[in-house]
Image 1 (tube, rainbow, N blue to C red):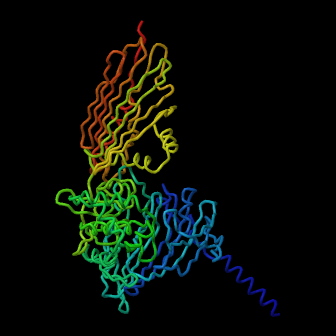
Image 2: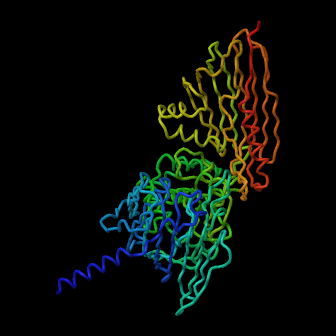
Image 3: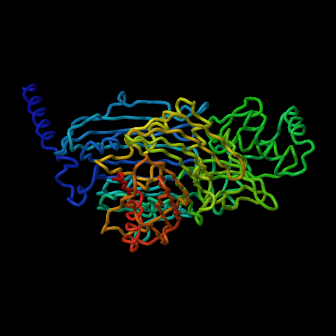
Amino acid sequence: MKRIICLSCLLLLMIAAGAEEPKYPVSAIPFNLIKNAYVVKRLDETEFRIISTDETVLKRKYALTVLNENGDPYATFVEYYDKLQQVRSIEGALYDAAGRLVKKLKGKDILDLSAVDDNNLIDDSRRKQHDFYYRNYPYTVEYEVEIKANNTMFFPVWVPQEAEYMSIEQSAHTIICDAAYEVRYRAFNYKGEPAVTSEKGKKFMRWEVRNLASVQRPFASPSWRELTTMVYFAPTDFEIQGYKGSMKSWEEFGRFQAALNSKRDQLPEKIVQAVRQLTSGVNDDIEKARILYQYLQKNTRYISIQLGIGGWQPFEAATVAEKGYGDCKALSNYMHSLLKAAGIKSHYALIYAGQGEEQRMIEDFPSRQFNHAILCVPAKQDTLWLECTSQSAPAGYMGDFTGNRKALLIAEDGGKLVSTPRYGLRENLLVRKIRARVETDGTLNMKVQTRYGGTQQDDRAALVNQLSKEKVKKFLQQELELSTYEVNGFSYQESKGLLPELSEELDITVSGYATISGKRLFIMPNTMNRNGRRLEMDKDRTVDFVFSAEYRDEDIYEFELPEGYELESKPQDVVIKTRYGNYTASVKIEGNKIIYSRLMEKFAGRFPAAEQEAIIRFYADIYKADRSKVVMVKKS
């Protein structure tokens, strides 16, 4: 009898399990969220609880439906941790297209890996990682994680739409704190204010969005936060490993950084003596700074060091002197110490570094918006900025890594936002001269001389200073917009200064460059500087065009033709003057030579979407002009 009752109970449990409601069926996704999407965020609930000034707890549960193979990367779970935060728990599940449970996450399936890359010598960062490796589309992954942090310096940013081609069914972010705590936030593309409730002395603030269609980032778009919903958060008073600070203002945040740096600029006596010897007889402080910067470059190297608060506090100068290495913070502090030993004042500075990151800073929202440290040497005329992680950059040059943006200068009275050097049309110069000979079989032999200035020399300088000669040749052999060519020789010469220049000489043979058809010879005179972009009209575009790069290109090419040819047709002179840039191109025939001249000035700026047609025409006209051909015909 007992056996019959047990079997009956088991049968009922099996029926109940079979009757379980499906979870996240793909059929429930609105069509507008599937259109132009790789992945759909079905659910995203984040709860961030501020326990005290040195403790927070983050809980997050989210589910993603992957529609095709392009969405697979989003299905991988990755969570980083270190001494400042610990991953308390992870749960996960996999569902098929109908919403049926396929598999649950088991603890043994979670990988625990180092998060250290090749540049990190000392780093306690690790990551928890998991992937179901399921490829029957569409499918859904669900994860739930809890993270405890023993500091309040780092508040998460709420980004419902993390990338292009991701649509959102539902996403919410809730902050829980003491009723008197001031939550500082800056919202982008969020309608209204957060929902605020109170319970038992606690304040609950909730932001939520639903049904956001996927976004594709258009050409020359503004920053991501202008395209979709984002909310940045920052503490007022905070604490990290015993250090207390405030982000109420940039001045206050600067005082916190100054406290971290305090008394870490003491040098060994032998280094002090070396400083005195190097600068003896030099009266100009800026020249002394250049000499000591070269000393830094020759005697240290960059290696990332991230241990707890070490992500913000530099190692002591004496440690760098002993070891000969350091991260951006340690090397900037060491350079500051060298200058101090020479009686020269300098300021540590925080910045967000990276090519194309000029738009990142939210100037009126004091918060943790930095990933790099540099040094500023004030002067009566030109302030000298120093990138202390580079072993080849000239003193004073920031380039497109840290130039054209704001930095937080750490002074005695706190922090202050200042501008780093700006590199524009006059500085970012390319001047190229080509002397070429066209052979009777269409082969082009050319000698190319190019002078790069400002940010236009950044990539070439990196090649010269970081790669072997063999790798440089391999790069050149793949870079040029030529069908079949051989780089016979190359050489480089650098001119270092506040505005560095780099000269390049190339010897190149291009097979079949000129097309021969009967009596005619077709030559495209623009061999090496053709604009490669044609734009399509986007009728749905509403955001501005943002152009950050500004430069000037000057090209003069001379082609010697085989004997016995005369001109049949050549392109008309082109003159384009717009708000976006200027362009001129002309072709002249002098005896048996083609003389081609081209000038391109590209302006930086922000232009409304209403000017899209004019911008498209600007690019199209240049694209066409850059590919125009000269037709020569054999004399009768």
